[in-house]
Amino acid sequence: MKKSFCLLLTLSVAIFFGLSACGGGGGGIPIKVSYWGDAKEIEIIDSIVKPWDKAHKEISIILEHTPSNRYQDKVLAQIAGGEAPDVMFCGTAVFINLFRKNAFLPINDLLAGDTNVSLKDFYPESVEQYTVNGKTYALPRDIAPIACIYINKNLFDSEGLPYPTDDWTTDDLLALAKKLTKKDSAGIVSQYGFSPGWFWPNFVFDFGTGWVDNVKKPTRFVLSSAGDKAGLKFYHDLMWVHGVSPKPGSTDQTGSDLFMTGRTAMYSSGIWETPQFRTITAFDWDVVMFPKTPGGKRGFMGGGSGYGIYSGTKHPKEAWEVVKCLAGDAGQIIGAESGLAQPAKMSLARGEHFSLDGQKPLNKKMLDKAVQYTVGDVLSGSFYEIQSSILFPSLDEYFLNKLSLEDTLLKIDNEIKNKGLKLQD
Image (spheres, rainbow, N blue to C red):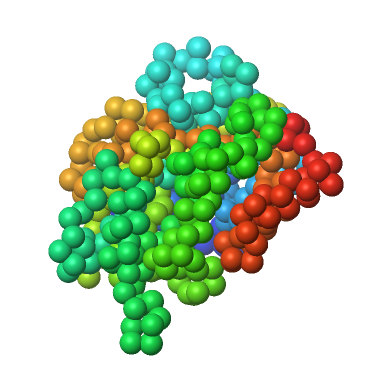
């Protein structure tokens, strides 16, 4: 994709100030858009904005890029300082934390007065991510069920193994991972059968019900349920019993690095890995849906992103036009064709720009079905505080094989009780 002057300006100025004015001649109403993303996504955003600008001289879009690890804190600081962006890019977790600060304007009235946009065209699950008590606060741009198991087809071929299908089970995953794990003469793993990457919670959602009893109105954790425990144990045993997955700290490479260098036959992640994986020339690859349990249950992490309007913006109508630009058909198509994102609009996801485009991964059409099995993010800011300070650190001890599962769950319960923490905000 050719970089325009506006893109070059975005890249250079963002390094120093994080701002890029890409509006129609600078004479229109300024609408500041806050977003994150790597250089490729900056390029995509620019390719969406520039042609739109030419046709909308009444609005000047000011792009403000921030690295993802600083994005939420920066936006919250801007809101507190009275310098909030008019339009905010948000994933589901970021949305929840900004929503708790009353950062978003409901878009229901704007939708009702706009005949060009209908939420019926979007995956219901993508709309639900940004809907609270019947009010919708963001227009989805993409949806991202974390349902991809990337497979190195050459490694399967070398062992004479058939490629897995979307109907496979976790038992099948384990059996294949055992056959595809290789050790060198010193007994050190040189090739892993499976790398879960950062997405081991999929096993909790697959076997169990997730972290809490109700993601919209959580009242209690359910990690001690039989299903959740089975999922945690399955992940633990991949590393410590079966030896088919990397143990924590056993390699300096990320899951995607392991896959790209041919050191893992299977890797779990989302569709956003596609742009970099399309650069692979050493082997053939594809995706398959994250496996179901032997009992037929399926569940995995969800995701995706959208654009919301700041509740205190002085220009809600103009901001809405910008939201439609960024999350509309043109924006979703560009993201789809790059391989970066599955469109939130169902017709686009199922059509020639994504599922039927003939580009790798060829089986990405399975994501259309995968959407229904996603488990939403928990609508509770205190949950994320508990998750980061108690839940994940304690589970790390189990995954490092330092504590038993029962002792880990007991430790989590005790810490939550001792600190008087509750799920309700």
